[in-house]
Length: 498
Image (cartoon, rainbow, N blue to C red; front, side):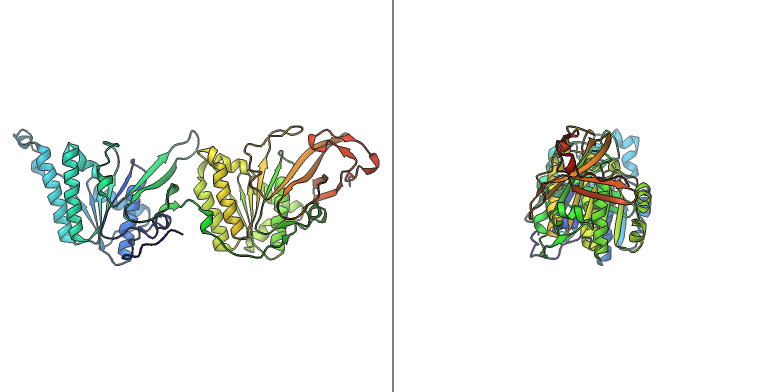
């Protein structure tokens, strides 16, 4: 885990994921910069920062130069927050005499007077309120008044020294609407957090943040996804699997289908990952559901994350096979989440999976399918890295994971959209093949890291009674190519129509 500071208790921001990234929060008594384009969530995080202080008994002051107090309170109310007496709002507006025509025509530069008046008003508001936490929104207005980089730096430095004498923890906001290349505050601030927004070609906007600097403190580096929802900003820290090592006893998990377990050398090992590959409609989902149902029947909990199939359709067709998934969900032993890849970031998906494992004790995870998960990735080349960390985490928690991948094509050569076969501990391959004028299905275990397994190919059939697995197809050659050759009719071992 990230090393904690041995100094004074940190000032929590009030955003659980962000406090985790910062190893507990902000070191008190320093100045921090929160920067990002308009609409990235700066004001929301700043309000959560003051509300967390109020909850801890600390007075807060919000100095606003870009929004009116009414707009600020309305924004807080939209999240269900009330800015009580512990949080004061100081709306800084230009003095009326600075807007007079006579003043604007004087020999003095109006910016000189405005900057001085603004700074004086800020200091007076702080002296009156004596706050423990301060939010200054925003630096763009001060930069405009300063008009030059040198004056701006001197002004920020003076404000920093003043804040230091007050002993307050200060969060300064910058909307980056003026000069995005100006790093003046970066060098003066104790820490810098940048918020970013990306707009994909299709789907909702994606937001992420990064801690650029945190002087004298450790933090979780890299980009972290976040969303703005009712109730505030939710940050999803990047998963680092090495931080979540646990001990557990490994044993074999069965599917409840004798022939399938025989093909797998007895079953699937606890705390391992299984990749189920095959063309559309070959039975991947039902095969994975079978393992989830078997886990529930053993007294464990399972979770299905559906990217592709509509939930109602899955419930209806499994019920026809005698599997009542709705009853399992009602009993709290099975969790099913229907996911929209266009509205979901990779970080949020990882957070949802972790929540099922950490909070509900789920030990069997089905992700249907990796094709849908790939669609949720704004940068698809990093899908394997995301999946590696997620699988490592689940394996170390003793959870068994089933990944489904729909391959392109139906018969013959197949291609997968992404190659994750080397990440999975077990790889199950499903295929269509033609025999005696019928389209049939076959499955085989291509890889298994733990223990031995059959090297045979067996026929699989999915019908109203569920999944049936036949004997090894020893009388055929070339089944996985889709058009097999019958070499021994007596040993064909096909499942008979019932």
